[in-house]
Length: 326
Image 1 (cartoon, rainbow, N blue to C red):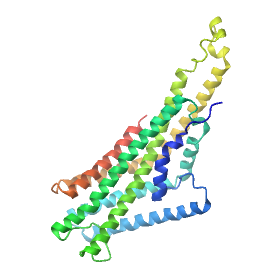
Image 2: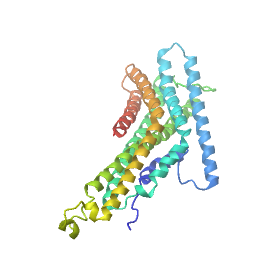
Image 3: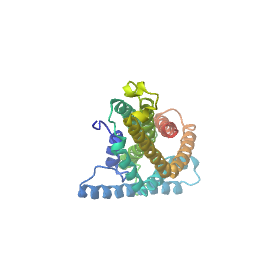
Image 4: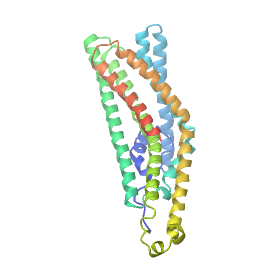
């Protein structure tokens, strides 16, 4: 009897860690302690509260500068981002039971890697997701650094830079400006890590379908390898499954595994249809706003962080298109 070498759920370790850290998701496994689970749920509620406050700040700012297209675009770039992420977060969390079901399937012994070739395929997928995660997280960190630095540089050069959000205190002096800028940057980076971790989890579900189909295909192609030299198979003109029960049993297991993969994929599709609609509509609106803003400013730190922001948005769409097509 072979032991389980690796499970599909292991590929999501990094995503689950960041989702716990940001309080951005409910169906994160391995929170068995009731007290920790309660604190995590309180933290999740706090996350939603912070997002709403953040969005209200930008909404009030847009109302205040209504009619000034340039200032409105500054506010909309962040507001649309935060709004579509909040809507997507809401759609995901109301279906938390389905996510738990998907995670249970990925934790099922049937999907385990019992053979070296299974382990190789699963580890290849895990490493690919980890490389993608590193690229995304580093992009967020660099973008966040530019997002923080650009307003300070603008203040030193102009004296009156614009922070596209409402604050109930004066942001013209250095202290108020610094507090406001750190707040805006911290929240957008925090949201960025949580939202992109959720995206990695979602595209990871699609990738697991491909992984399981690769494993099933490999086993079907080599299902008779261990039996072709059997005496009975060579002596008589018979189908292999009539003289070797092991082949029949293995084929039944593969068929059951395939049926489970199909159910898993159908569940993913039902779960993510609306979220993907919000994803593409929201991203399109943000990309338009960012490109409009970039065409109206010189090449400076603001332009650079907008360029990085745009690259992150395009990367987000790319990974969904790449992993979501089977």
